[in-house]
Length: 197
Image (cartoon, rainbow, N blue to C red; front, side, top):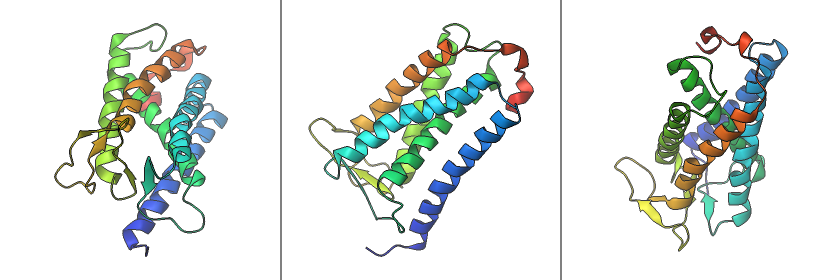
């Protein structure tokens, strides 16, 4: 299937964002811009994301398939690695929202407000990502264990709609990430609101 300019844009953008996130968090670690527990949190977020990204990959085309194969071998597992890094960045965007809207200290004990922000962000961004890319970059198949729960929305590219498993992942994953984040040792003395503006 012939690639259109938009396909190259999606391919370039996918890897550009993933590489940028790795560079950003590496520089933040090297220059001591963020506390180490937040660097670890990013890596943990990438690892959590990889659990479903690679599971979806190994489930094969019966579960989900690429609309078009990207050039230079950039489909398949390289794309899943890139998306795992994106997932780590998406988790950290939830952390950033907590720092932006909640008082310090954060992530020292369980807080429904912290979890609520991270959960709301996780669900919102998943719906947005599916709206933008489902049918353009990938398609999830309707299966007995992955039923359609949201029909196609106006302006979206999917003719299938939005299926259960990708949505459920972003209901459960922020809870897991948050509970792990609470357990990471922290040095709150070097955190200020200015770290997150």
